[in-house]
Image 1 (cartoon, rainbow, N blue to C red):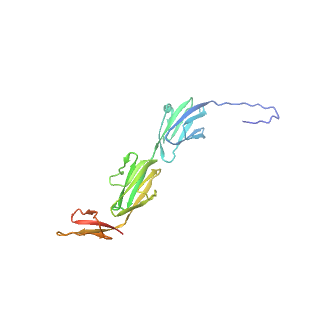
Image 2: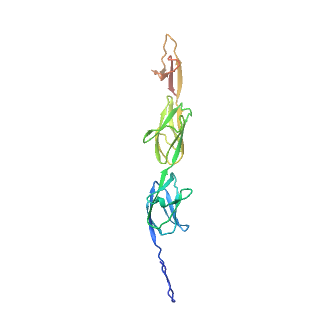
Image 3: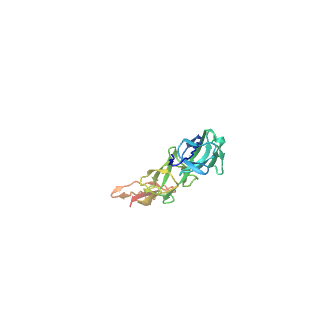
Length: 237
């Protein structure tokens, strides 16, 4: 609204500019700035109608947000777009109502998973999502690449004689089954502690040996692969 003090004769002309509706739609999440005559008129993050001046070149510029990447322009009037280099910028002649869609997709992020001891002699960890157990990016590797906001479940399995202590790094938890959301690249280490002494007992032919702890006979955990007469006992420290 314009206010005028009338203390003399003046002539006023009112100019009206015709506008047209631009139906801007989003697939995924992102931000679009709309400009005319090098001036930003609005910035949108949600689908809706934007009214712009008719017949004045409209510039659409993508502003990516964390975790999402721009993929393509589409929509009923995408053929009227002049797509720039890079394609995150495009121009449009708003000579009539138009419908344009900006498509965004989730970006990949990587989980790097290590164990202590590093050779997994103390235990190992499996990684799964809602579809099941995941394989590492490379056979025998320790990285898992998934899309932004994927929820992963870590399951730690102890080897005999070790106890799971917890996860550390970019995810901290002392529960062996633990979930994390991949909202960025993450590095996580699972720590296992040696809580037992090991006793390797070799028994010759013609005899046997019982191992007692506090007066009770204990059963060996396993026999070695090379010699079935050799037995391993794990004794708490």
